[in-house]
Amino acid sequence: MRVLLFTGKGGVGKTTVAAATAVKAAGAGSRTMIMSTDPAHSLADSFDVEISDRATQVAPNLWAEQIDAQSRLETNWREIQEYIIQVMNWAGLETIQAEELSVIPGLDEIFSLIDVKRHVDEGRYDLLVVDCAPTAETLRLLSLPEIMNWYIERIFPVERRVVKAVRPLVSKMTTLPIAGDQVFGAVERLHRNLDAVRRILTDEGSSTVRLVVNPEKMVISEARRTYTYIGLFGYRVDAVIVNRILPEDVTDPYFVTWKGIQAEHLETVRESFQPVPILTARLFDRELVGLALLDAMGDEIYRGGNVMDVLYRDEPIRIRKRGPVYALSMRLPFVSKEDMDIHRRGDELFVRVGSYKRNLILPQILQRLEVRGANFVGDHLEIAFARTPEAGAAVARGGRGRG
Image (cartoon, rainbow, N blue to C red):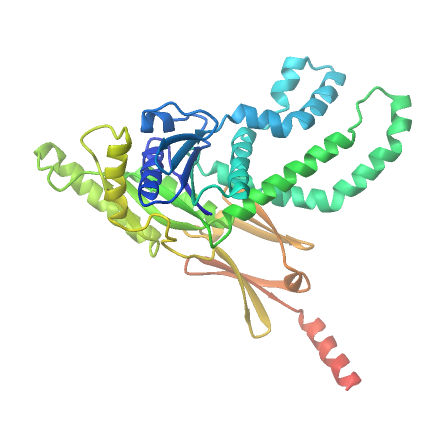
């Protein structure tokens, strides 16, 4: 199944572009599902039909759903939340306060994305279009499985055994609630689901992100940051769509200055994101509501091309061998050395860019090597790994002795 995610700053027309893409795909004969994970749903407004949190057919080959984030939160977090509330009640907090504090901000958006896994597993559609919340925060939070992975693999088994062993003793000494198997089981299920979503969305053969921008300075700056963070977490951008460009046939003197400003910003977009394809859509003279207008916008954006094609192939993270040195390369455009921090701890590499941080579990071949330096090559950060000179010498002496 092909998966397309649309994200961008609020108000740029992201939902309209995602809906237009879905309409064009369905019109070409592909069974298409468009789902919204944006808490402020507007898919129903775009199609001008009622849409629920279940698949609603809005046109031939086209279905839509607006995810009920609260419902997904209760389904995936309920058992863990109930235990947290019990602990907070034991500590003296009222139930209402405990319920509020037991929900981490952003969890509802993450649980909405678990529906991506459901649709991929069911295999009913050829294309899944995801209208994300108006921020890259949704994608950034998908780094959670990597953080959980460390806990699940190292601490979780030990903690589960210890809790099981000491539960009878602790229960006699205190009324503190002790996590049961159902809580540990819920954590494991949550981890599996989130990890499956991450693997789907980082699959180079099926999933890509399309950034939607307007020809405005603040919007472009936000898109540049989003592009950097998307690369940091291993997602692939295959197009940037510039929406609401004043058309050439607008000649009113009032818009002359605006057209000049937009032309400058459009050139900035091309320079910033090359070689990623830049698609454009004019500012229409009416609200884009309904299938006919969405289809017209799809024509405007894709110019007869196949919307399901991977328009640009990228490797945000790759490893290459250069003689005795391995280079781990990460695409991090628009970043300077002052904006980032890199350090290694055991078999993990921590990379911080601005306020965003990712920890990478190094593959085995790099775990045996030392970090020997880091440099920017173009818009890629390259981290060099190699054996220490002492280790290399010891290996060489050992080889000669055995010979």
